[in-house]
Image (cartoon, rainbow over all chains, first blue to last red; front, side, top):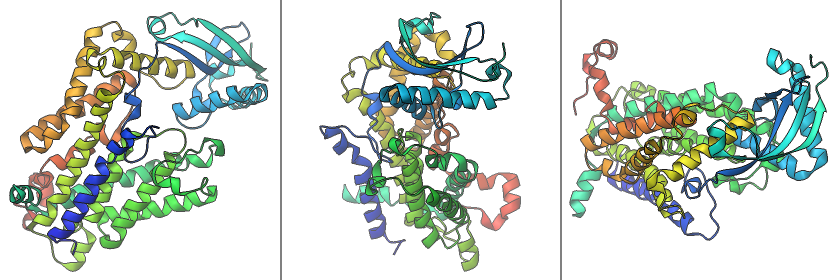
Length: 156
Length: 304
């Protein structure tokens, strides 16, 4: 049966309809992406130059900023980590402090000399211009510290 | 017309071509399970609130019990090896395709869809539903019979290529049917897109590329990149017309993914290492390579 032309035609037609089904998804009022059939909604929008980013960063005893790699902050990919941070920020003070403390605990266990220099962890919400940032001006337009906590054992 | 279309679609092909595609794509799938077990099990660590079911996972009312995932991934790994070896393929092939579909869709149901896995799932599905273990498989060894040159080995390859060009075409049409369709060909949208991505990655402390910093003010580069991408994506269906065009297109698309990697540090393993493009080639020709000729023996040479 699997070697007949009729079988080949049936499988081909079904798969072709499935492959073309994202056309139907695109026609829907509410655009919802799917897997493994997609209409690639991320390509349809414009990414603004001005962006608010919630992130977790570190400071040494002298107040010098030390960026914290995402794996110390959340689990999973960059997008998943970003969403976990955003969710904590949206939930309010307690969730922000929890995120800060969890990061501090992970930093305490780190064997990296750079990470061990971190004395204070801050959860920050800041606005940047992507164009300025890429040209070297890394100062946020505005920024707000939402939570901060100390990393015990942080070295001066 | 109908006859010409049928002759095109059911053009005979050697069983070895489809079987070697199973070996190549199957090897990628086996590696996915053996080398990425931690990533596949990652949903166990994610908070339940991050669960956003997509595709077939929408059938679930909530996340699967966490303890179910490790045995499921182990079973899928065993079936992946059976798929690759062509062992009891009529059973293991479709079961593996279903498991791959389920497990990858489940992983993609946690906040982000990894679009680079789309084509892998569909390619494996086509291979699983086709007689791709009629050669170079344990089943063929057991039967002591090998498939020859027949139309049942040609259409699955055409279907895999159709899936490939279809996904590229959709990516292209998405750019030209969205609200920014006018700006896309100028390169401004892609420039803003990459800049935004770089900003987020750097501030959040994720892996990023410094190439974008060096080329950000070279607007002409983004124009070339945007136009090239649109031509490759929207023009993808032309690759189905003939073999020579398909190879040129595959080379262009292959190059595009490496450019994306250097500029955005985004890895598309199935694309960047050429797995997605192998169905465009007469892969059985590798058997003419001297070391392989020695291994498979002269009786195993394939003629088209």
